Structure formats: C-alpha cells, structure tokens
Image (cartoon, rainbow over all chains, first blue to last red; front, side):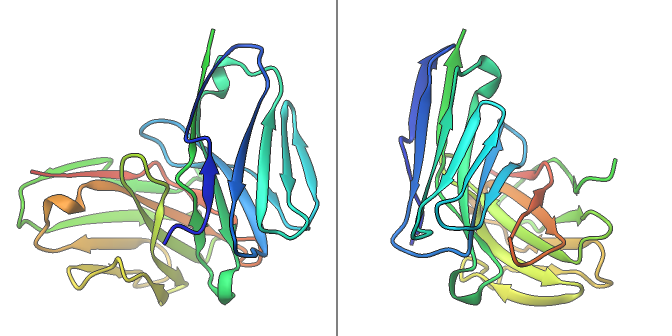
Length: 112
Length: 114
C-alpha cells in the first residue's frame, strides 16, 4: 500500500519557470522529508519539516507542511537545469515505526 | 569520505545464484536501513537495525533475504536463489536520530538477475 501520493509524476519545464509538486496522504506523519535523487545515485536529503503549517526555504526551494501533517508541497522558483532530478517525499513516525515511507516521486526535467 | 558506502555498485548474476551486498554506514550512526528501489518507484523499506539488533522487517523481505549487522557497524544483505524479480537498486541508509527519521543514503547497489 502506497501511503504517500506524489503529483505530478512527471514534469518538464523550461528554465526560469516556477513549479510546485505535491505530496499527499490520508495518514498523519510526525515528520516529513523531501529528497532529491539523480540517476544511479541514492537520494539526498533536502529538508525535514516537523510542525504542522511549517514553511522552510532553501535558496529557490520552498517547502510547506500541511496544518494536519498529512501533506506537503515543494515550490521551486526560477527553475534551473541543475534542478533536474527525482523529487521524493517521505513520511516518518507512522504507528511508532522507525521506517520512512516514500512516495513514488516526481521526475522533474528543466530544459535550458 | 565519511558518507555511507556500498559495495558492489553493480552486480549481474544468473537466476538461482546467491548475492551479498555490504554497507558501511556513517561511523557515529547507530541506525542502519535497507531499502529496495525499482524503476519508477520510490524506495521501499526492507529492514532496520539499531546497533546490532534487527528491530523491524518488511513483508517484502522473504525467507530468501537475510540481513545482518554483527558488530553494530557494517551490514550485509544476502539474497539466496535470486529471481528475476529481485532485480532492483538496493539502498542502504544510516541515521543518528530516530525522532525526525532523517536518512543518509549510500549510492546503492544495482542488481540485475538474468
């Protein structure tokens, strides 16, 4: 059972455009992480959000955790080709489990 | 290099053979995780160690799979009698704190079963 739904699954945009990707669940998580993965590599942590309603900024990336801690969004301003990759959200703390549950990811391509 | 390292990076084997992957976590991390990732999917949890104790296992981890972390440092994941459906990227990650679940991943071991 996939507990985290990410949308869109694929996104291809031009350099300079803005975009938002979403991570939704019917379950509550104690925290949520966003990772970026490049082909043939492991995921790399971008940010962790813990508090409902929390907003974190990382340069041109803005992350938001939903008030009910069930969903999150990632907004990229003025996308660059270097932003190309697979963006994964992962939720923690379900039922006391130590494991992270990952979504399927959004594959982003930024064309020059 | 103080990151998580995995070996081998790539493994091609014939169906029915056994394979073993090794993971060396970040030295001060006491938690170690194995995940599996197939094409078009996010990582799927396989198992988790705190020090040398294996505390959680997924139902994905059939009896052909076994993982160990004998001294609480490096870990091995063995797959016996490999099947074509085992072809995937096997990712190891380590973590220091449980509360936020932040994982630091290795580059993965890609398995191809012919």
